Image (cartoon, rainbow, N blue to C red):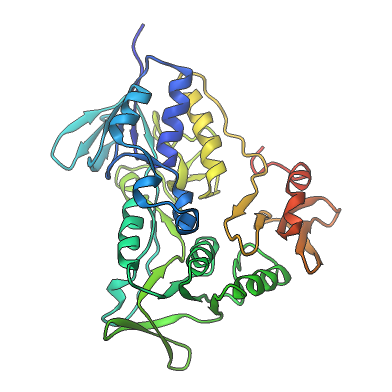
Length: 384
């Protein structure tokens, strides 16, 4: 019997999800993981509320690369960067010139923060947090600071704003949208979330974009609107992510917004798969934890020899804003329907229904989050 082998590029949640599930199914398959960074395992969602939970960068790390290698009986190579993939020759070329062959290849490349093309000598000082190393740098830069500006009032921007404000920082958040979570919440729910976050001191500048950032003494001056400005000691960008597709595209693998894969998570090249933030599964890019979990399970079975279709059930997203607990299961953008919104002093229950009354999505804020389980059971699967 020929021993099977798998090469995984990427040591984030997606890479480790497929590695762990694969090891559960098969304890002899040879597994190698290549990581551009330290290769340790940690929960990325912990980064945006680590101040409130009392977590330091060191305590967020669950296990280093050597410990994970022992746990998974896998060869994990930290600080190892892949520069190209030879799809026809079934090998990858490393930065040090080494060529590694593969039988099956899983791309778990993740995504990069989107950076605004800002003017001004302060633009290069804008930070983003996309991994543990970024977060370590952010925490170091935060020392001695009090006035923080955040670009983006989406999920990550709101979570960081809540975390910082709860610890006494003065936080100003900018967004082109007229409300927080503009892509996820109907207007009434957005207004409720805004009011709750404002009560802990978060200052929102909606319908606003930063045009330039200048260095102003020991601070940064952010210009917006009709030559309005504020001063901040640290600027954090949280305006979204773009899947890492360059490596795959250069190898002739089909890409669009992400690396295009079917429901088996297979690319157009036999033996090469993709999952996580870098993958576009049948047209869907879902950079959340639950899709990664389901993808890891399905792909591990396929890699172990049992081709398995990926199915996404309804997967509500928990927004970590303790000032206003929020759970969202956004409807498919192509869905036709309308929001039904109930508002009380304790919360918001917004249901997105089709013309025939079927529940297609919801947004629950405050006390209404208690209905998450019952409503989730009524939702159709994201991918049957």
